[in-house]
Image (tube, rainbow, N blue to C red; front, side, top):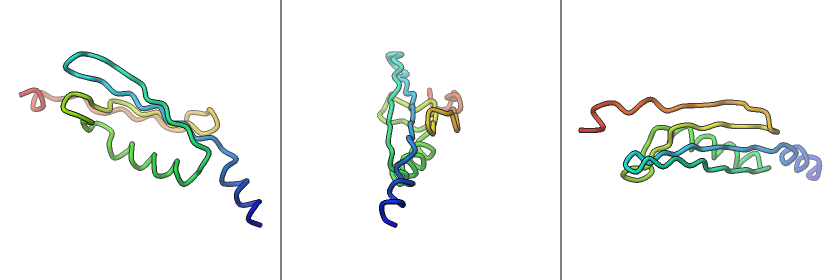
Length: 88
């Protein structure tokens, strides 16, 4: 029973692409995370949904997240544009 449960929990591949942007220097970078563990995938999904649009440092912000399950795109989230209130 345990072997069957492990097979089910680890049979899928979950991939996350996290787009970040540095607003001072204009650099853009995509961070890719991949796991077969369902529990890790759920935790990472919750974290990126919460952090979307937030600043990771003073100038670097998460602007978009794409979530895949077995190479199939499941969700794509984009942060709102920075308003003038952030730039004051």
